[in-house]
Image 1: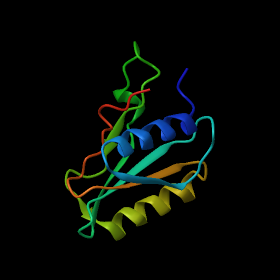
Image 2: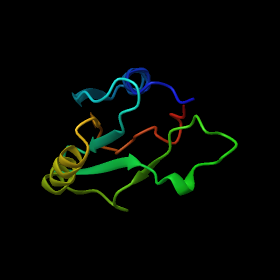
Image 3: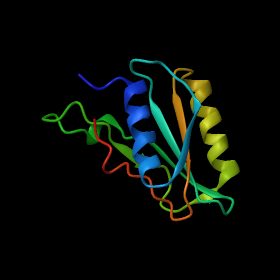
Image 4: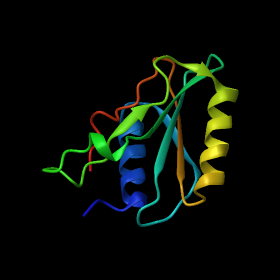
Length: 114
């Protein structure tokens, strides 16, 4: 069983805070199992978007982990990230959107498993 989305988001934001990175919940989704999208604004008009990875990349021996995949290899203009997020919300109104700001683009998603 996977950790509730609300608990995972709170823990993720705490992790960012300990590293001096501002983060906030922009959209609160389903408490139990809403998909989580993480936008990392690099404060230069660009951003990275991390989405839940496809089910095919999950390891059957570790079903509780949350795995994220970047939607692009490099930062893209923020309006294109916002367009993608708007599409995701239209597709699934239960999604969470978390936004952080970090010039270096740090995201800690490779460390935030649960």
